[in-house]
Length: 159
Image (cartoon, rainbow, N blue to C red; front, side, top):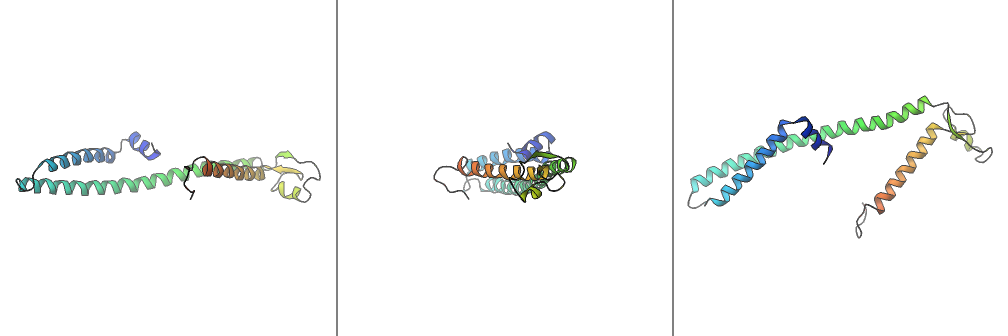
């Protein structure tokens, strides 16, 4: 189940209940229409057909409203999650900006020592910002590898 579906159930959105009721009613109308002869009972069949067409139009309108609200909900949720993840990283980098994650053996990396300690860690150490960047890069590489090999069905090409 997706986050928006859980949100609709938790918030008891009247549009979702109306959509479910409308779907059930339309199925009943379709069954009644199928059991009615269009030649023998044309007036009844035409009336039922108009009601069915109106119901389908209403359902399509309701579906588009729900899809629009779903898009807005997903945008808000993704924005909140993005700010929580990246905001927490920025806060930690700022909080621990003068701390080092670990110290490098002297002379192993030559002039790179000065780059690895940026922005504020002592020379010869790895700063929190550089460590976060390296970890993020490693996690992305692992996720892409898992996605390519484990989640792609056999015989299909990854896109």
